[in-house]
Image (cartoon, rainbow, N blue to C red; front, top):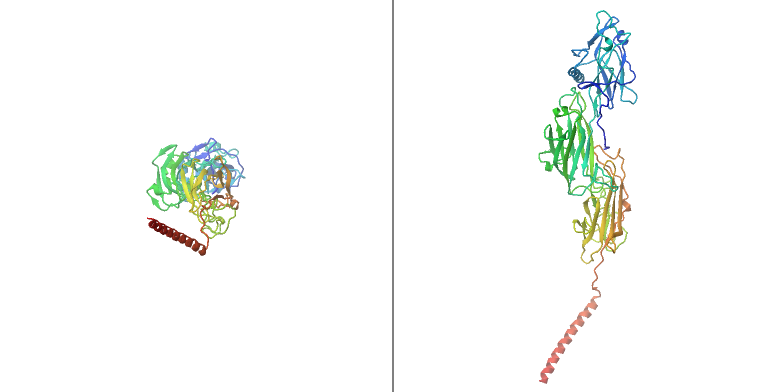
Amino acid sequence: MKKSFVKILTVALAAATVTGVSVMPAITAGAAWTATSTQAAQTLKKITVSNVTDATKVTAYQLLKGDYDGTMLKGYVANTGVSIANFQKPQASEITKIANDINDGTVTLDSIDMTKVGTSTTYEAQVEAGLYLVLVSGAKAVVYNPAVVAVNVTDPYDLSTAAGTSVNMSTYFKYPANAYMKSSEPNFNKDIVGYSTDASGVGNTEGDFVAHNTDVSFIIKDMKFPSYSQDYKTGLVYTIEDSLAKNSFMGITGLTVKIKNATVTTGFTVTYYTDEAKTVETTNPAEAIAFKVAFDDATIRSNPMEDVEITYGSHFEATAGVNYAENKNTAELHYSNDPKDSSKYQTKTDTTYHYTFGIDADIDAQSQDTTDGNYNKETFELNKVTIADATYEDGLTDPNPNTKKSPYALPGATFTLYTDAAMSNAIRTATSDANGHFQFLGLDTGTYYMQETGEPDGYTLNPKKFQIKIEANMNAEGIMTSYTITTKSNDADGNYTVNEGYAHYTNTINLDTDVAADGSVTNHISDYDAIDPAEVVDTKVAGLPATGGVGTIAITVGAAIGMAGFMTLYIVNKKKRNSEAE
């Protein structure tokens, strides 16, 4: 999903306003109006509205129209269904009711669809003298309030001097013919708190490198309640939902809601779920992997354009997928943007990605597609052997058709991984399998140290100490684009300078085609065949050979028996001589 960094639109111009209604001069050009009379046609003027950035339709509804006496405009009358006590000073409540009635379909007024001026944010129409209500419909993201514009009559058709007329028609309406549409577009941004930096030293709030069994924290911010006019019906929606990846995270901890930078405990409800789809509710946050914070109508209306923020934490599990498995978390903002039906809402999403690394593990542990070239493909950065020989067999059926094996592979050797060069803080152990592979899972980027700590029977223990360095890079969306594992051993001086192995993997993605709406990523990983595994060699223990045929063994046994007989005869004869001497 391509991340959208949409900022809140602010009114930069001074506006003449009625609550929920805004007007501001703007300059544009004309469209046709079908006048209701010859006299009305003589009063055609242009109306415009600006700051319409997101709409499929802008409509001007005629509230008051000219009342003519022959060729003379003597005043104004309300269209059917319009109730305004003072034509010159309509009240906000009167305008809101009319807008509601139009949206409900209970009132039908003469109207005209305004025309967009080129590629600008301005719409225009030519209309006769009168008062008009402008409504925006079909907006995808922006919330618009109604606007009121007016057309006053000027010479030569200003008939204020006619008998019985005392009103100056050129200044009758207090609204101009141009309006700046008051609007607000909620922003939305989910970030990782305490995020990682990549190999270039650049931090990224959208992506993270993290070890198994680690606590992580999140913040959902840059949000403001929209400024809803009263024509929006009761039941406004402003809801934040968040789903963590199943098997990757467990528990929602420390969930805190702030309005205007102050922690609040009322004005909203929180619901926890045990599944990503948010169908199974739970009252225990410790077993939840999703939640929904829903603000009530009164809170939304009473805090227009005020900041909203949510923070919480979770635990990154030992079952989280490694390497290019993104372990994504997707948050959603739902907010009303249709005055006709407040239950209808617009949705914005933002996803964070969490990568952890596995040495000698699946390159893309999320892939379940057997036609995918990365499916079940083992990375093979370390190799336990009896002879160092960079010859590997491909296409093995056991245990993995996508693994590699040396003809000198040695199973049964034990290795320990440490976080420090002194090798005092052990964090993982592994044993080589039938292919000579040994695996460490759930590692953060950084430098580790490894040593063989248990040799198979009949073999020597390799005395080398190894340094393993994991480095990674990600793009601005937080998606990992490459990672490298470099293995070195120590030299005679104890420095890690001897290159033992190197592996580099590149992920090429197109944000428009490879990232789904829910944030899922289709990876395109290369460099797999360029892996140079570090070979750890154990040699056989020297011993006496058990060689020779059955004949040789028989001769040896016979010689031993003969020697025993000779010794027995010698002792007997010696005793006999001693007896005779006495």
